[in-house]
Length: 265
Image (cartoon, rainbow, N blue to C red):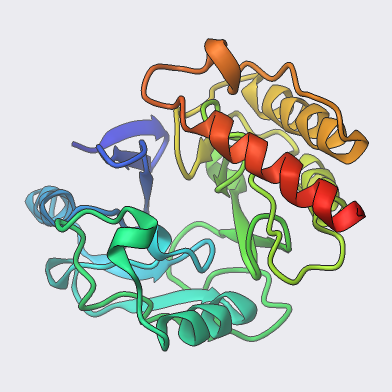
């Protein structure tokens, strides 16, 4: 079910990893960001939009991980965008196929329309659509071509897979020269871009209200700095304080510590 989190901005939260699909209302249609994960949920989202007299005018994928590249036929055939690097990376990775078992992908996830996105020219500042300006803040944290989106008129930051209350910062450790530097630089970009933003929507987890944007940026910065120094983190998202159902995040944390230690060695 769609839930309004700001004027003209709604969120549909999936049962899968609290994934957030974001709907931005415009005068003639909606922009759909990270459309969802499970087939029945995307079909429900399409029906909710139709019942409200709304059609999808454009789609956008924040980054090239499989759960942010999905689509459903009922959502229509609108242009689906991503950054140039996001689209190129998605195309290259999908050309090798996806191992459902390796990534723990449920059978209810539809792959027919996965990754059919068009890369926007490098340096594009706004998503092309007939609605409130949505500014693209591209960086290299978490995944190549990752983009956060700022909807200034609505006071909203769509963070992609960053600034979560349940997920720690997950670095891109695949053939990147400086994953920690990339992440810290991205946090600085988001801090500057947030401005007077009142609402932050992470790719996974709870929507944050007033005051949460800065708090989450700082929490992520503290975590990444601990990784940089090779010390154990006191972050509440790992260890016994992790929320029920998110205990596996501690394994991600341990894996990142080990990978970074190996890279230093």
